[in-house]
Image (cartoon, rainbow, N blue to C red; front, side, top):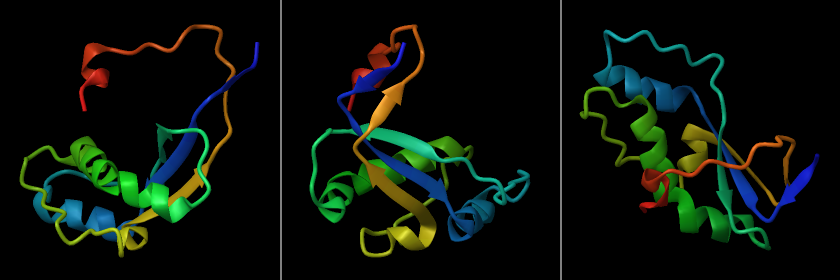
Length: 114
């Protein structure tokens, strides 16, 4: 069964400059940034201006991307701002999300904290 979700999305894929920053603090960790996977952030469904939506969510996106790779707690990404976020990540936005799974979405208590 196909379900159209009432959500838009922001797709974020780290670029080489992001991985270079990660390498600075995780030198012993092998980092393969040639095949980065995108993270999909579900957002409100209806929006007209991509830049307004990105500006609204960019700090949370940077923190989330950092949490995924920061094994040392030393990774600082203060140099990434709204103005240069696209230097560090490939970003695309859209407003059509289709769920092909029959199982309901699972949400944990941790997912509800902001």
